[in-house]
Image (cartoon, rainbow, N blue to C red):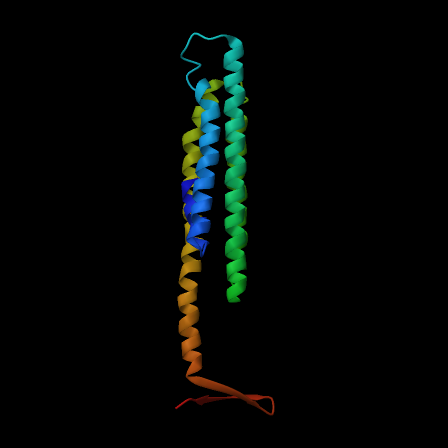
Amino acid sequence: MQIIINRVCLLFPLRKHRLWLKYGIAALVLCINIVGFPFSNASVQNTSGHFIAVKSTVNRIEKISYLFIDAGLNFYFIHLVHTKLKGFGFRNYETLIRFNVRIVIVSLILNVILGGSMWSHIDYLYFQFLPGFNLVKLNIEMSMGDLIVALSKEPIHTRVTLESRSTKESTKTDGEIVQTENP
């Protein structure tokens, strides 16, 4: 989750907004963890079946909460990138954005499957899925990093293109475009 928070913060122009996002998500995750903390060691203790059932429910609620936070951050990131690319006038990155939307959806589906494995009566199923899903999600995050790299490199290319165009002047006469060099 920290990776996507940092990516979203890269696109925020104001430090104040970056701090609000970071501390807001940190406070939200802290609240989720505080709620789950009393139940974290229930399987080791000699506790009643009711307490273990409550622990299981709290764990599921935690996973669902993290799913919504992850979904919100990922789609907000895609929205910011799409808005910035439109602002620069770039249309050639539409396929890259669609690809990233699809991999975000795959990532969220993986979260749903992982959370769904908690409802299974086979306890080890969750722990069997966890390492594989984490590797796939890390690969997805790395792919999203490529989008940030492409976005961060593009304004430099735009500036170079605009500077090279400023040395040439285009005029239109009788439907023809004539290129002339500026002195």
